[in-house]
Image (cartoon, rainbow, N blue to C red):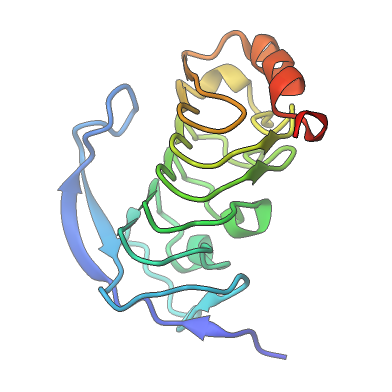
Length: 193
């Protein structure tokens, strides 16, 4: 049974990463920006031509388009991706299945979307991840171990959670992960909503 596919019709361009305090700040990266007509309303879609790997793409950026779900095979199609930015796309969820294959991910910015929950160990196989921006979503539930990883959690330099339903705080140089977990248990558990 073959899965449904979507064609991204990427417009590739080089952009300088402007996010501060990451190992790729100020460096030009080749970014895939899908065409204007891209709309993804269903989960579990794969990028068409998935057997054609493109190792030149280092970033994936979508702004102000309707992309409610990430394609399942983004990391397989573009294995060198270090940066994923989805700003005001209506993204409804993020899960381990969608993040699978994004082993080189350094920056994950999902600001201004409709994400409501974060599951346990969501970022566990992302050893290079330095910045996570989930600000301006509708997060009601965050599993206390959502940010737990195979490597030390302190490797996440910046975690933006401002302007969510159960949390509105940013964390820098996370060395107080236990305090974050305690806050999540008190304010973002299923019992508080």
